[in-house]
Image 1 (cartoon, one colour):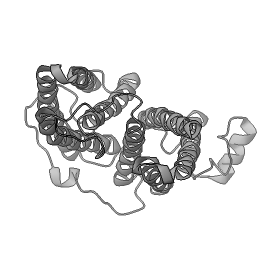
Image 2 (cartoon, one colour):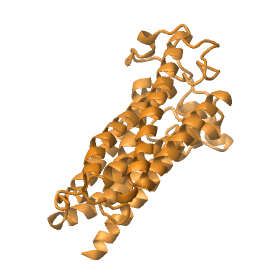
Image 3 (cartoon, one colour):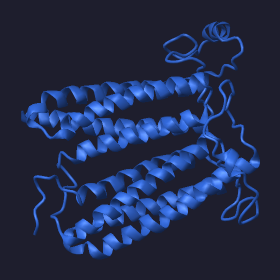
Image 4 (cartoon, one colour):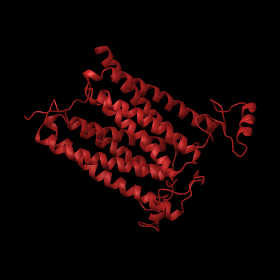
Amino acid sequence: MNDKLNLFFRLALVAVFLTYGVILLGAYTRIENAGLGCPDWPGCYGRVFAPTTPAQIEQAQRYAPRADISPSKAWKEMIHRYAAGLLSLVILALAIVGMQLQRRSHYARYLLPLLAVVLVIFQATLGMLTVRWKLNPLIVMGHLLGAFTILALLWWIALRERRFFRPVPVSPLTRRLRWAALVALVIVTVQIALGGWTSANYAGLACPDFPTCQGQWWPHMNFTDGFTLWHKLGINYDGGVLSLAAAAAVQMAHRIGALVTLLYVGGLSLYVIAAGKTHHLCRYGLALLIILLVQVTLGVLNVLTHLTVPIVVAHNGVAALLLLAVITLNHVVRPGAHEETTP
């Protein structure tokens, strides 16, 4: 039994790290404009591997006569798919081990891994639609949110094994923090969604300056077009189709969301640092504050450096860390039902 519990925990951690890597690869693929590096799915020009040699490129050209073949972009896209495929196998193994532990386990050991399997299937479907519907923004954003959801779920599974970051004893402080931490989770999730919408619509440079936008504090914007979630099929969204006013609306919404996140999550972090000394919560508040400040700094650098690849990838990676930090705070102030006793 202990061997299987250890295996379950290790698989959960491996899955977390793999998911984080897939998110980084996805961000890199996106910023390199390689999302349509392979015009088909799950293969690439009808092959398991991206074309490399002149003969393979010629064969790919016959397979997709209208495609502008770029072996480098094709390989970037396929590496992302290979990593996602490996992650799927690990999550499936996690679910199988969890089912074997079902009779002596809490819900996190069998229901949540099964939910992760369902999400992986949903992610694969979105990955296929992303290619077939030519980077439709709603599908691209859904694909991003799906990856972050899987990351959050796997991290929660690992946390509930209580091998590290164990919940603190119940107290009036932890009871107050439960709702505050949950609100922080909602705010961070919404901000990640706004970031995904900004990326999916190529609106990152609609405001090339900071803190102003196009030299103004409130430029001309079209929120209706900017947040029209669904457009007709058949449009190729590679490079974006929004007008400057619509793209500016998306970018400004993301900036407003960043300000709300900074004020609320930053305030919560400071409160946890100040009030959590006797409950060993300070480290969680400090970690959350540091990650938040790094993320805001990277957001500003994205604008000032005009979306430099390393900064964009780091911005996505730290967004994932911010989500994990908020989830960890929720975990430590929420013991299981069997642990909750009144002090």
